Image 1 (cartoon, protein in one colour):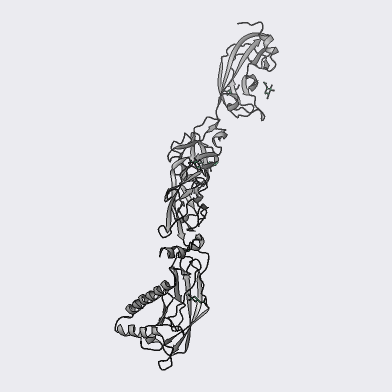
Image 2 (image 1 turned 120 degrees about the horizontal axis):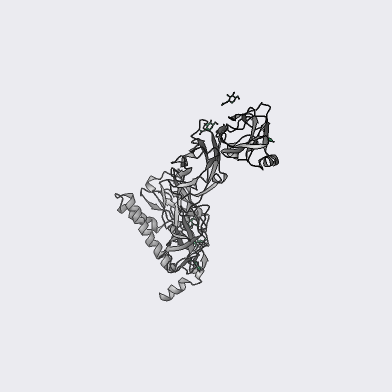
Length: 537
Ligand SMILES: *[C@@H]1O[C@H](CO)[C@@H](O)[C@H](O)[C@H]1NC(C)=O
Ligand SMILES: *[C@@H]1O[C@H](CO)[C@@H](O)[C@H](O)[C@H]1NC(C)=O
Ligand SMILES: *[C@@H]1O[C@H](CO)[C@@H](O)[C@H](O)[C@H]1NC(C)=O
Ligand SMILES: *[C@@H]1O[C@H](CO)[C@@H](O)[C@H](O)[C@H]1NC(C)=O
Ligand SMILES: *[C@@H]1O[C@H](CO)[C@@H](O)[C@H](O)[C@H]1NC(C)=O
Ligand SMILES: *[C@@H]1O[C@H](CO)[C@@H](O)[C@H](O)[C@H]1NC(C)=O
């Protein structure tokens, strides 16, 4: 038992705390097992020694504390106390759970006994949970993430080792998107679908709460969840016309119809569609995947070709006969390069119009004519040259100046509405039986090229001659009277129809005498149809 080096070791140990007590005996002691709570103040009682020797006696015994944690203790008589200070607080989380030292008792500088001192540090809840920083960093999740799947896991630790429960603060802005099924796991689950197009950033507050302590300390973390665009939208031709919004505020819209007008002479040209240019966009704004364009139908044996990247449509062959193919209906497809199953189809119309370089023109600003008062329900307005008055606009796009799509109408006025009518041939019919006596009347005639929409205007100065007045003789008047007499009892409509037929006949005769009609475009082609047809004649 006697260790000759004991004194030497005890005295040499620099950090050793020791206390010298005069005592008669070192015997009667035992190993000391005690507990102390962390965070206790200096002088906290740890244990009484059971050594027989009287610490206040004259005969000296000497007690010496050595070992790793000896400086956490000091001796006060036969009591071991805690050596802490404001700067050195006993912290179980830092120090570990046990303090160990050895107590040696010397009598006349000879070691008489040695005891172990083991002090367990009792835990106090002196720490809050703390989130691991890397588990609460901003997150990036795809909008295609399945509902009910775990989107991320948060983790908090508590230095006191307390059990932690994770709770989503339902008051945080986007709490409704998430839930936690297993409160201790920290696994955050997606509770409803994400949509990048409506919301790209979600905010969420999560609490980590101690559940096994009376303090229920908690800590919170604010998380940012960035929604990433997934490929969930189809391409869309622009401009798109919104038709509705679904409950997620996603706009549903229809593709436009692209239209272009061309003429028979156009060829090898880039078609300039309206609304234009033809363009589609990936519905997933941020992905903006490249699209590939193609003509699904209507290409007419490569007459129309599309640039698969720019959607520019070129016409490579000219349209020979616009009457055969007045319109081409192209179905244009835009599909995602990376996923051809995602596509959209729009219609492009190519209308073949007659070439139109000249507007219609009246060769006079005012035409003059007359009618004779009669009881006839319909009379044609005549010229003073004893002919039917033809008011026709000339369209120089046509060799003979006659545009078959020319439409004539009268500018309605209160005095004339219902009393006058102009035919498609430019002949004015008056309902003579309903005319009240007057001397003169000016009518406005409007000629409109129905294909181009261009108009020309002229006035017609009509004189009403009394039956008794000396009248310029016209063969047409006689004819009118005869016709009118024949169907006096019949309905007016029938009469007018008959008149039209008659006029057409008269006009055809007139034309035949002049020349054969020829199509528009002949001028542009440089071929004089008249010549060709005359040759054939
Ligand atoms: C320790 O000893 C002191 C006197 O020496 C006594 O007052 C105290 O009650 C003792 N404590 C214990 C827990 O035995
Ligand atoms: C008490 O602790 C301090 C350090 O905070 C140390 O310097 C001192 O020696 C210790 N006292 C004893 C008696 O061990
Ligand atoms: C967190 O602690 C604060 C007080 O420290 C308390 O008001 C709040 O209700 C606690 N939150 C939760 C979720 O326990
Ligand atoms: C797009 O068109 C070019 C020629 O214009 C062709 O070389 C290329 O293969 C086409 N791309 C696809 C994906 O069809
Ligand atoms: C005006 O045009 C008509 C045909 O519409 C023609 O008969 C007439 O001679 C022309 N008059 C003049 C002055 O050019
Ligand atoms: C095509 O011509 C029609 C008239 O026939 C016109 O109403 C339309 O505005 C024209 N469209 C374009 C794109 O020029």
